[in-house]
Amino acid sequence: MTSTTERPAASREPSWWDKQGDLIMRRPFNEWTFTHMNWLMPTERVARGATHLPLPVGIRPLNVRYRFQDRDFTLSDLHRRTHSTAFVVLHRGTIVHETYPGAFTGSRSRMQLFSLSKSVTSILVGIALRDGLIGSEKDRITDYRPDFLGTAYEENTIAELLDMTTGVGDLETWEVPNSGIKQFEQTIMGGGDIADVVRAATRTAPAGERFNYSTFDTQMLGWVLEAATGQSLATYASEKLWQKLGCDRDAYYWLTRGRPRTAIGGGSLNATARDVARVGLLMANGGVAGDEQIVPAEWVRRSRGNDRPQLAVGSLGPSGYAHYGYANQWWTLGSESRDAFTGLGVHGQYLFVDPDAEVVIVKCSAWPTQDDERRDAETVAALRSVADHLAHR
Picture 1 (cartoon, rainbow, N blue to C red):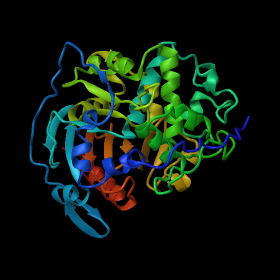
Picture 2: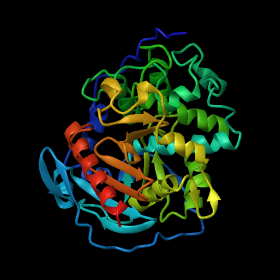
Picture 3: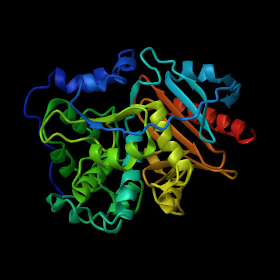
Picture 4: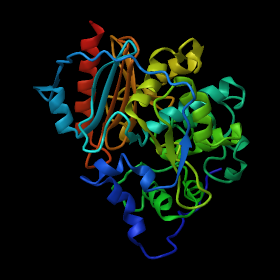
């Protein structure tokens, strides 16, 4: 059933709190805020395990040039032109290149990952499905969250959340003051229950028909996961990922200011670049870390792409750039030679995985705007060039 509920009306005059998200994300402040979100928001710890498993380090020159808009550039050019704050490259499980161009970053800095968090949420859902805590991806959302009966999400399945084909919500546009995502952000920062914002979303297309990038969809996915496991995202991520990967540091999710406080499964994970690289290495190795199959191999495979035409590279429509497809909360980059895929976050956060080249790259950034098609295309060109270079070594 389609909801006809209007968005929650503002209960007070706009204040500094309503603009806080804009201030946090504005350059040059974002070079600091993106590494200090725990100073700005309530948080919940993603505890690392008692066993630390250091990544091997074998730094060597990475003299890579990439071509963009008919010009050749170096990696130093990339960092300057796209405001890199961290850049870590793994080849065959070894750190071969690592630099921290950000003013406040280093190997122990925990980076605000924004929507790269969505890919981690997907991994956790895959684990919960394997363990039988979620019965099936064909289950309805309301099997786990009956409080969404009577909303636009009432008939949607978990599978539709994973591929963002629910048909719920408007185009995710940060520049429109009253858009769904801006309402969501203002409620996160200023108080109130974000579930009310998500419940007010309306249906804009039949389920399964088209792709529409939606943080609401991933927020629902995180809530389904928490309901199914009986644990918070942070606790479950600690138990199923951080402890098993032997991470360097605790990660954390920041939480909404209003109560009930909740993590943003689509955007509030913070972790070191090296620990994010560990997550990428897990995916590059088919879900295996050490001698344990942590994520089902089939779950990893489906994250590399599928045969659904509306999710193919170049077919995503207005909420996806032409060089991307989508699958399972990951952006796909299928090519004739290799099927690389990447987690993405606004302001230039990347977890690039090329399993065939045995390459994982983490790039964190502090772009002046949430989205930037030119900077994104340039970054993808550079990351592909790094993977191509290492694939022949």
